[in-house]
Image (cartoon, rainbow, N blue to C red):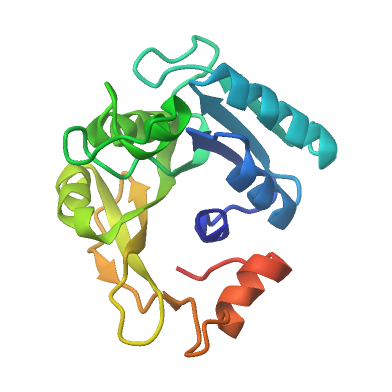
Length: 216
């Protein structure tokens, strides 16, 4: 939901959700931004079927559609350079750095396979138009790898930490970037998720319960 809230889409925009899963982030974005259109690509056919069911249940079939496809060999009907924004929640662990979960679907969602981080970012940027944006959520401890892949390819990079609360370090960051510009990188204040008692902060609750967007 925080990924969807961070996409700077407006009415009429076209958004690509790379690795859309069951469509949760795509549907959150479609609910927040009227008249935007979200296309999802997902390798797992069963997840694509569930995404379609979710679109029906949320009356979003005219605003969101998901297709089966591999980012290494994308479907021919997915035209490069036509999307205003791409949103990405790639597997957060590099291959060989962790023991994959026993469930194949969970393993694919958490650990990189044939498509590594570079492939995910390369595909997303290929699909976005000039001056379009890329928004992704990832582990804070892979920030160096993320910046290395983005350096020289995008500008207006914003690093937006998601702080757990208290004195805990950020485990996740949202990265926002724009294709075809050279604006310097900026470290944003980010968002504190929890109060001392563990409840959500008012700012986090506004995203989770009221469907508000994040100002990155």
